[in-house]
Image 1 (tube, rainbow, N blue to C red):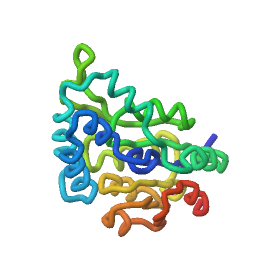
Image 2 (image 1 turned 135 degrees about the horizontal axis):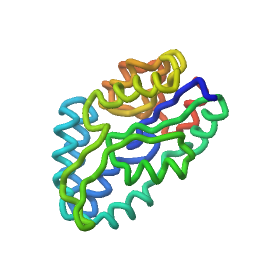
Image 3 (image 1 turned 120 degrees about the vertical axis):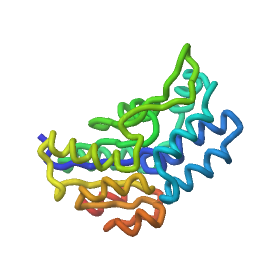
Image 4 (image 1 turned 180 degrees about the horizontal axis):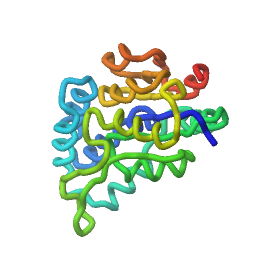
Length: 208
C-alpha cells in the first residue's frame, strides 16, 4: 500500500495549456477568456468568480466538440514518466483540477493516475448551458480536498508532494512538505520549496 501522495494540477502542469482556452478558441473568444484566466492564476481575481464567468462564455458549445478537444489536449513533456516514476517510489498520484472532468477523466486513464478530481460542465441535450459545478470551484478547494484525501489514505503532510502553477494551487501547498512550483506564477513560487522553470515534469523526480 502506498504511504506517500503526489497531487498535480492539470492545466499548465500535467497538460501544456489551459483547457478552457482551447474551448474558447473554438468559439473565437480565446483572448477574452485568456485575460480572465491569467488574472485568476496570478491571484488577482476570485477563482470561483473567474471560473463561472469564463464558463458562461462557453454556452452553446456541443459536448461532442468539448470531448473531442479534451481528448486531443497536449500533455506536458514528461507527464507519463513522472507519474510512473512517482508510483515506483511508493506514491499515490492524483490530479486536482479547477478545470473539467471531460479532460481529467480521459487523461487519468491515459496516464495511469490513481484518481482525479475536477469540475463538471453542465449540459442539456448535448449542448453546454454555460453553467458549472463540482468539487474544485473555489480558491481553497484543492487544499480542502487534499486534507480529506490524506485522512482517508492515512498519509501525512511530510509524505505529500503538491505540484502546480497558479494561485488556486496555493491552498494545497499548506498541507504538503514538498511544494513544487512548475513554470509557475510568482505568487506560487514564493510559497514553493521546489521551483522548476523548464517544461519537463521529469525534473520533479530529482526532489523525491
